[in-house]
Image 1 (spheres, rainbow, N blue to C red):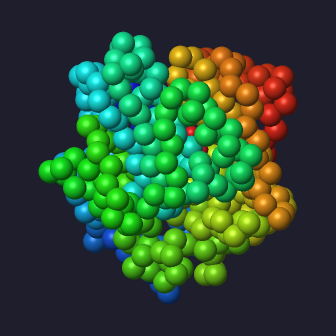
Image 2 (image 1 turned 60 degrees about the vertical axis):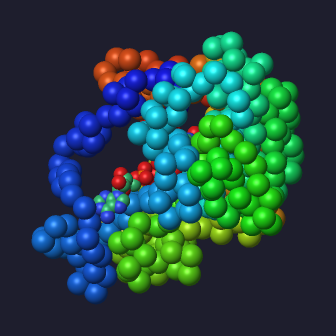
Image 3 (image 1 turned 90 degrees about the vertical axis):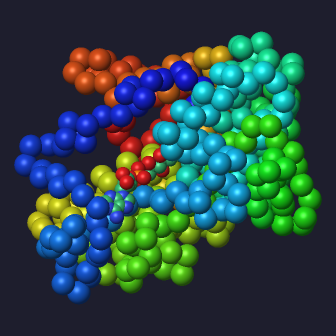
Length: 358
Ligand SMILES: Cc1cc2nc3c(=O)[nH]c(=O)nc-3n(C[C@H](O)[C@H](O)[C@H](O)COP(=O)(O)OP(=O)(O)OC[C@H]3O[C@@H](n4cnc5c(N)ncnc54)[C@H](O)[C@@H]3O)c2cc1C
């Protein structure tokens, strides 16, 4: 989004992630047939004994009135690259980061985006001529993590002169006037708009009987089982309600940990060693720009509400995030070194996670 990474630095061939003995079939899943225990890809049926649904969340910017042509969808790669081009040309004015609807993946992302934009403008020498405002329908940043964490993120924004406007549900975008229109009829002007698009469960899931009332797939919080025999769902497509009544955030760290839980669940059901339940522990970095980051971690399954804290910002957290990235994206010796350094850093900072680092 700020041009700090090239496109090819952010992707890896799926085939390089697979172990020997795993067959990869690439294609669009057109149907899920639970009665016949099959998925349909193109015109072909693929039977399963066990199925793990990991289809993520579908971004649907076109469904939001006025979005197309006026907002940058920084939640996908093309949108982030388009926003980077605009930010490079930006000579001053009002930049708005807006959340169109809930839920969205990565609860920190809109606030992190505002912080990174602020840093980028400062480096380009146009910060003084710019205003940055975040609008969200939420009562605070990352409400799932409680009021203390929300106040800490609000403070990070405030320290950088970023205006945060909460409880502002959006109705539409008036593209010709370059204004946001809120459900209460109020309007806000923008010169450059980065907007979190609406998220849905993928259409193939919504059409299946796996989808619950919200369209997402309800699962057992410990085992990730759906109500259907031998069918699991993990990651963004799954829905888990926490002790405080809010959904488990849609985040990669959870998708990753849940994958391991389900793999062991399936192995256990065919005679392997006993499985370990998913424990709801998670973490995330909040990049601030300028080589600094904050770090949030905690237990989302704690009762009566998740117990999550934000660690004070520092350069070491940013280094941790870069190592984390390298542990996923690099290969060979660099990957091994990044993973080892990350483990040492995690121990030194007292970060505990049920997830083995990649
Ligand atoms: C800007 C941004 C920042 C983020 N930052 C963080 C972070 O710091 N930490 C963190 O933990 N998470 C972060 N996330 C969230 C994280 O990326 C997601 O939670 C994670 O990728 C979810 O993994 P998943 O496997 O469930 O879904 P995905 O990664 O979305 O994968 C689902 C896959 O299924 C495919 N698919 C969908 N429908 C079909 C179909 N019908 N047929 C075939 N394939 C299909 C999709 O194309 C996709 O490749 C961030 C997300 C964004 C957008």
